[in-house]
Each structure stands twice: as structure tokens, then as C-alpha cells.
Image 1 (cartoon, one colour):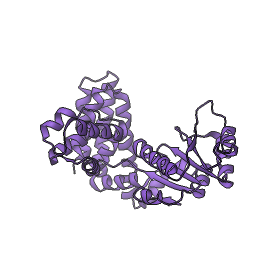
Image 2 (cartoon, one colour; image 1 turned 90 degrees about the vertical axis):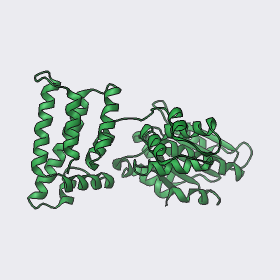
Image 3 (cartoon, one colour; image 1 turned 120 degrees about the vertical axis):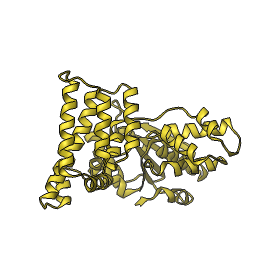
Image 4 (cartoon, one colour; image 1 turned 180 degrees about the horizontal axis):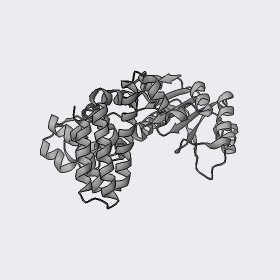
Length: 334
């Protein structure tokens, strides 16, 4: 049974199901697991056994934990954490057998990080997902991040002006755990009520997690300002120029192939499948980019990327990061 995150609190008021599978954003999954453990204590499940899967983990520990009765004669909670989402062949087989015959008198909580589409289709994951209650926690997109921050601030009876809200969002982009910490810090530093922009700017650190995937997403959505900010962050963090170039060029080549096929009358769903693009969110941003870009503009962008490649190799003089920005702006322009 798949459960929406918003319905979790109501579900935890009922007698707990024997198996729970939580996966997704680190902070949101952690908070949900804490809420489930608190619900277990309210329902008289005081004993908990925690198992963390690492390279030295032996999967018979799960069988032993399920077989050992509670010391107090009641139910117990088995807290199984798989940080890599890669249980291996032995672990996958064990999880399938476990899901097929859940131990009585036991509530099992399995927590996982964000999963890719391949992991979600794995037999072991489908087995535990179908046997229990599964909740996926997605990181709020950049567009939804201000609303998420507003709700968190409201929970501690604070609010900020719209400009300060954007300031926070820009400085914690991609790092929800850091966003949570900064919001808590505002609660500790200032009292209840509306904070000023200067108070927010003085308190919030630049903790944005600039990475290549965000740059590629900003490129596809045509967000020029975000591209500039991410490139500046990557440069400041010392990101290797060849890696940034690879990400940009790879995205351009994919768009060029899709644009060329679409212009020749091939159906876009078939083209996306051929390029092994199955994620629905990525498909949506690619469609938006293709609606904005022409075949000739993408060919010109490829030539620009080739010129940057020569700069990276020292064959042509130029400022590489300025060229990255120009290339990004070229692709963001309608």
C-alpha cells in the first residue's frame, strides 16, 4: 500500500501495520521515522532493535531479530536501515522471504534513501513495498521550496517578507537538512512574529549544495538566473571544469538527438524510451526545453561546447567559466 506523506500522521494514529517502508529525502524520511517510532511507544511497543546495513552486515541478523521475543513479553520494533539502498543478492533474497512471512508481534521499519527507477523495479523492493505501507518523501522542488520554508517558519510562529523568503531558498537550495537547521536557528535567535530581511540575511549561511544535476535541471527549465547562480557556486567550490563541460555537453547532445528525431516526425515517447529517459519529472523538463529550442540553436550550442573543450585542453585561450555562462544563457533563451 502506497501512502501519501500528508496522510502519514493520520495513519500513525491507528494500530501500526507490521511493515513500513520509508524512502526519499534524508530529512523528511528521518522525521517520518521518528514519528513512527514515537507512535510505536504510544502503542506500548517499548523495545526496539536497530540494524544498520553496511559492508560487514550479516543478513541472518534480521532473522534473529525477528525470532527473538521481546524481553518484556510484548511487541517490539525492528528498525532496519539500508543507507545505500543496495542490499545485494543475499539481502534481496532475505527481504523477499521476510516480506512473504512477516513475524508476528513485531513492527518492522525499513528506511532507505531516495531511490532511482531501477531500484523501485527491483524484485526485493517490490516485495517489501507490496507487503507493507510504503511512503516516498520527495525533496520539494525549487518552485515549492519557499512554501515549504513558510510552513516550517509558521510552525515556530515566525514569518519573513517575500524577499527574505527567496533569500533563504537561494541559500539552502538542494540541502533540505541545512534548510531545516537554518529555520531552527531563526527560531532560536529571534522571537515569534515577522522577521526583517536584515535579520534573515545576518543569520542564514550560504549552505547551498550546488551540484551538476541542479545545473542540468536549470538548463532544461530555461532558468537563466539559477544557471548563473549554480555556475558561480560550482566555480567557488572548485568543481572540475571537464566535469561541468561533460554535463552541459551531454544534455545538449541528448536534446539535439530528440529535437532531430521529433523534427523528422518520430513520436517523442519512443525517442525518450530509446534514450532511456523514464523519469516522469525529467521527461517533463525535457519537453519544456524542446518546446523552447530549435535544431539549429542546439547545433550552435554543440559547436560552442566544442570550443570550450579546446579551452579546457589548453588549445584555445579564453575564460572557461565565462564561456560556461554564455553557453547556459544561449540555451535558456527562447
